Amino acid sequence: GAGVSQSPSNKVTEKGKDVELRCDPISGHTALYWYRQSLGQGLEFLIYFQGNSAPDKSGLPSDRFSAERTGGSVSTLTIQRTQQEDSAVYLCASSWGLAETQYFGPGTRLLVL
Amino acid sequence: GNSVTQMEGPVTLSEEAFLTINCTYTATGYPSLFWYVQYPGEGLQLLLKATKADDKGSNKGFEATYRKETTSFHLEKGSVQVSDSAVYFCALQGGSEKLVFGKGTKLTVNP
Image 1 (cartoon, rainbow over the protein chains, first blue to last red):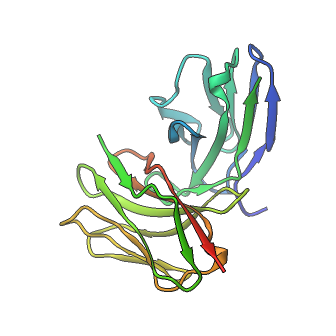
Image 2 (cartoon, rainbow over the protein chains, first blue to last red):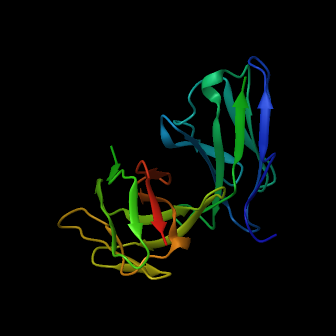
């Protein structure tokens, strides 16, 4: 497809479990971003990648959150020991380069029970 | 730091009514400004953007003008349709690469 894709679309997990969320950016886009959308906090920036490096991790809410990107393409956001407050929609976006227009995927809806 | 303040709503209008959703921002330098729309059950879609002062972004009948003197980027549409029902987010991209979003405004258009 031509757009950003994310998987899974929905994830239900138990408190304390680890989860992995995947993002496939638009082909050729060098920059990739993760955001979180929750009722209480609105849309929050988590982390971005330029190529495979992550210059700005300032938005990651705790050390339970990590992300990587390989081959300048697919990215994985990992949440360890999930907590109920991690329940949110996790959005991925990509762009041709930094400071270019960001295009969003459909999101992964995470529910931690 | 950079921030965006937008009219929170919810906003309910009748079809063919005029729409304004206010958005103001605080930023250092010269940010780019965006409106994104989220239709029910879907992801964020770019609606329009403006990258410098006095630029007007437009798409699907929606318009917004980048006003540096009032630090505003208000969204307008002359005649809304039921299909415009969605949540609208104002956002800026400033010195860093991340987008900073407003809290969103839910619009409901009734036939």
